[in-house]
Length: 339
Image (cartoon, rainbow, N blue to C red; front, side, top):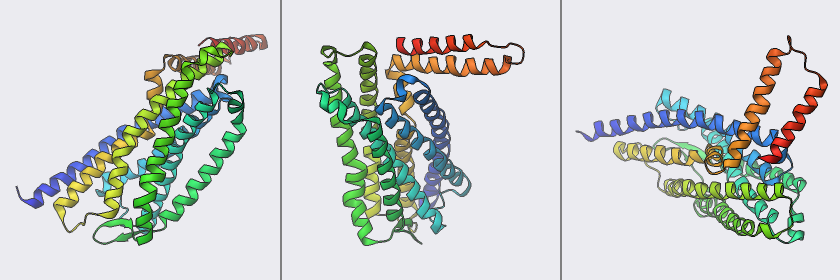
């Protein structure tokens, strides 16, 4: 087999791999993140919980990112690549959007771990330090920072004929190599999330000694376990892609070497698909590792969706009295407290 046919075969496999894994990731991502948003916004138990607020923001960021990923998957299936090497505007916009949603997701995971540490701490002043209003301010400020940072860094991307869409400014290359990927998008969120999730887990093991309502203790234990598992998966999925990005920024593969370029495209497709699991997996982690969350999802889908749908379908023939509505709400509140 000649080098040309081998490179063509590897390149075609990389395109097919990107297309099929992209469709699978998008399907699971849209469903999982939509359900996450629905559950955390519908259950009264979560509405005033700061950690649930960060998880909701993360899920919204993940959901919007899926639509960016849809465009990349469609373009790859049509043109054989994501066309960032053909159109300068798309070259810049693709990385601006990707970095904005990636930073938002990574740091919402970190914020949820930090918040859970403060929420489960035995010191009252530390528990009262973080409020939902303060959490909203932090989230808003960081999202603004992520947008401004991504626009600034994305403006340095340009198209070079032999390597495609890459960072063309030397200072931006050095910044991405030594700070953005290893620190801002790598080590910093990993360290914050890992340290504070383990500290929160340590706190929650001694939570029985504190005088707290049983509903609050159950919620703290549940969310701490969910956040810890999310952080473990987050670290495992993020590290390979961050390492690859640092390498490829400094040593881009030229299209003039077909075999090396095809292998690079295949490695990029595999590592990108692994990294993109980070944007879809939070709901499924919660479902697998938290039996209480499974009951909460069932409660929302059955009590909320099914009952509303049945009410809308049957409202013409069956008039529901106001007392029945009050009883339905009361029974839902009791169900939330008992799960």
